[in-house]
Image (cartoon, rainbow, N blue to C red; front, top):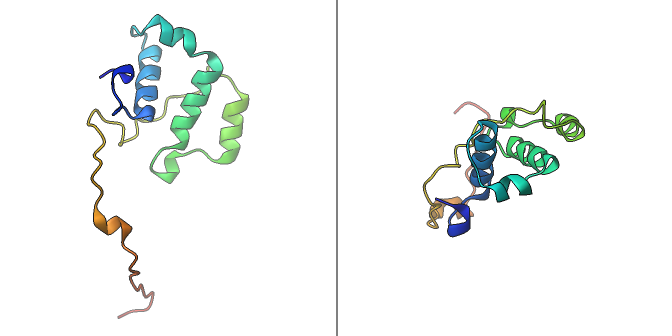
Length: 110
């Protein structure tokens, strides 16, 4: 699936794919290579680190600042986020996600 031909493309997934193809030496379009300068690559990689689902996989703010001040050379690609798959995003939302009911939680033994 090509990003320019689909309104279903999830942007972080597209960015991740473009960066990994570039890092692996795969062939990508000349326009993509020309448009992704070092600063843009660094910001994309840092952004992908910051949107990791598990908090322990995300950098601290001081680590983000260090990454922003450094170059692309030392940056490692983060793991591919689990929500970055080839399946289109479903517009159906589970209704219980929007429930206004509160569940009582007790820390004391029952």
